[in-house]
Amino acid sequence: MMKNRILLTDPEALKHVLTTHSDIYPRDDGTRMIFRDLIGGDGLLSSENATHAQQRRMMQPLFRHDNIKSFLGMFHHHVRRLQDEHLARLQLSPPSTPPANTTQTVDMHELFTKLTLDIIGVSAFSYEFDALAPHQDKYPQTKQVSVVEAIELLITPPSLLYIVGILLLPWFPRWPLPAQNQRRRARRRLFEVVDAVLASKLSPSAKPPPSATSLPKTIKMLDLVDLMLTDTNDHKVSIDEARIHVMTFMLAGHETTSTTLSWVFTMLAQHADVEAKVRAECRHVLAANNHSWDWKALGELKYTTAVIHETLRLFPTASMLATRVCVQDNDMPTLASVNEHAKPVFIPKGTQMLVHTGAMHRNPKYWSRPAEFVPDRFIEGTESFEADKGLRGGQGNTYYYMPFSTGSKNCIGMRFAMAELQVVVASLVARHSFRLTPDANVEPSFVGVTMRPKHLNMTVHLVD
Image (cartoon, rainbow, N blue to C red):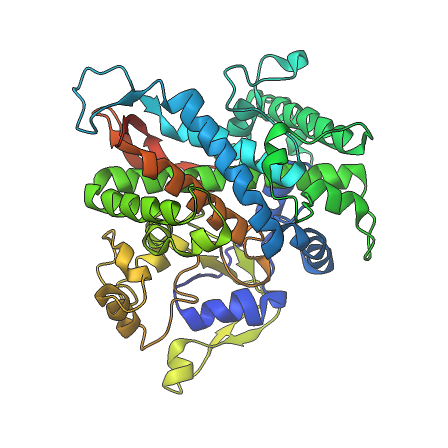
């Protein structure tokens, strides 16, 4: 039977569905089943109602302001490792366009994937995955697939057969199909790593990784596993549940960030004037802050932060949010019903609500020059900022700009991700310039829930 479907592009309707009445618009069963199969159970990506609320309460302390501040030194430690162990041997100088036959190239998306995996391992689990090391696979019993390869396998878009099968046949995930077997092996590989994380946390002799020792000592650093295993509010977490939540953050907490980094550096490579302006700002802020990153320094990166936001506008981490389903008849307001006293839209029970973030972010009704890369639009008082605001009737960009979603199911790690992006971008651009090679292909490619450049092959240039 055909279902009613509505593609939401109205900010008042989005507010109604995602925030004020989100309880009657849960995520659809199909989306939840796919995520449940991906991570091995119900986590933040698939849970609803009281279970979802309890999980967020348990995990929210990890992303408190003070904890995020304590991670900045660790972010920078891993960026320096990326620079010293990978980029140093590739550097070309001066930063001019290299000859077409240069062999000093690197797939920056691959490096960003490894960098963000190492960061999420230490910050969320106090565990060093060591993905940036030349021989990063630490578990010889499954030599056929590394951690990064296992993640790539799991986030590969599922086939139509898989989607139909998992929706119609509860036992479909157990079928011995080649693609299914491959996904199961990848999931087992990650379960081994996660179990090693849990064992290290439960062992009295476990020690933090070397990079964690550089964090400020004045703030007690909690990680996700600590919080889960010691939670006493209203639910004691089992080891199986802890594994599910660790899987969620290991998959979602680094792949989305690595994709955003890939797009930021694509934009910088295509807009040399923007890159130069970012570099000037980053060097000025570093010089004024004793060449280290703290919360005050990040707050001074106005233009760099605007570049990140503009990249997220054009290339949101998830171009489509999880489909919502209306579970009871209701009237949905729109801008017209609020401002012009028009009638709200009647939504019958069972209607599917689709939210295309990418389309919303490029809607010419709300954004001036919507297809262009204009970082100034995120700096208050600029001509571009005022032009966008005028299109929205003087309103800010809430419900017009949603790279981390919004409401009770928005990205719990939003502030963490922004701080990580700021440190990585500022640290790299302050010292290096990046150029696309002739064989690079930055057309968007759908992988998992994200869109990333197909082939981000670049040259790296040391900048004096």
